[in-house]
Amino acid sequence: MAGKKTIKIKQIGSPIRRPKDQRKILIGLGLNKMHKVVELQDTPEVRGAIRKVPHMVEIVEG
Image (cartoon, helix red, strand yellow):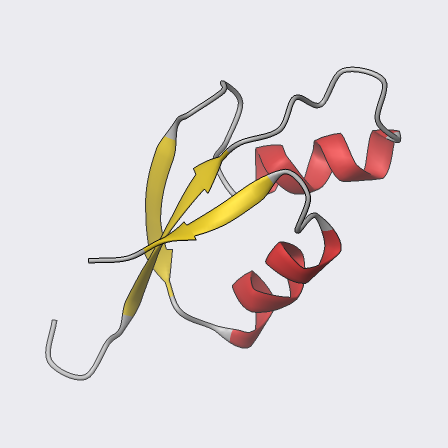
C-alpha cells in the first residue's frame, strides 16, 4: 500500500429514527452495526460521507 492512506471509522450512533439518507450513507461506508470498525481508503468521497453523519461515526486513531 505504497502511498495509499487509509482511515478507520467506527459507528457510534444508531440509524434508528434517522433520515433514510443518513442510513444509506452508513451502509455505503460499510457500517451496519453499533461499534463496528471499517478501514477505508482516505478519499475526498469518504471524508464527505463522514461529514454528513458526524454524530453517528468517529475516526479511530492508529
